[in-house]
Amino acid sequence: TEEKTLAIIKPDGLLGNYTERIKNVIMDSGFSILRETITQLDEERASTFYAEHSSKSFFSSLIKYMTSGPVLVIVLQKKNAVADWRTVIGPTDAVKAKVTHPNSIRAMCGLDLEKNCVHGSDSLQSAQREISFFFGEISSGELVGMH
Ligand code: CMP
Image 1 (cartoon, rainbow, N blue to C red):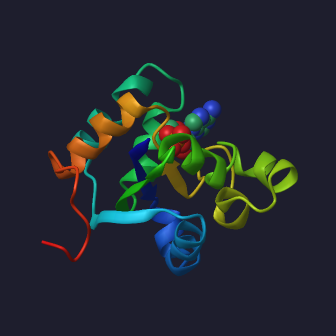
Image 2: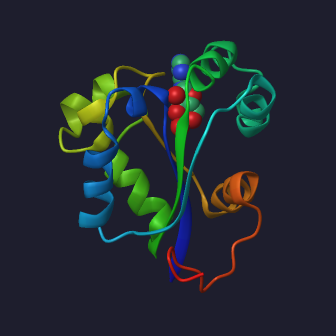
């Protein structure tokens, strides 16, 4: 069934000019882009977005990273979008991705376990929460350019 998922090109991905290459992978992998926006997260918004990690040792470092510059937030749609986008981006740790998934996006532009250049929702439930966090409710038939 058709699903939506949330992708984020993180500050290092935008700074490193990886947007075009990442979008090519998005298109080649059969995703439609429903929405996109560039935004600068502040500490409060980043902490809310990553609330599930608030007790982790890396939390403050993660918030510092994600607020270090603008991010590009994208709503993707296709069949099985949540799992397929996770496959396309590769493992969380970009160092490992370069070894085990050399064709993944994180292998291409990620640096390490934290600075992994892209985000993908980890479940359908997370995707719905994350999409409304940035965009509010999106009607099911909506496509970029059609409204
Ligand atoms: P992501 O899976 O998109 O969302 C949580 C982020 O926290 C993750 O990407 C990394 O950027 C970061 N992260 C996850 N695990 C660690 C870790 N062990 N150390 C540092 N950063 C991490």
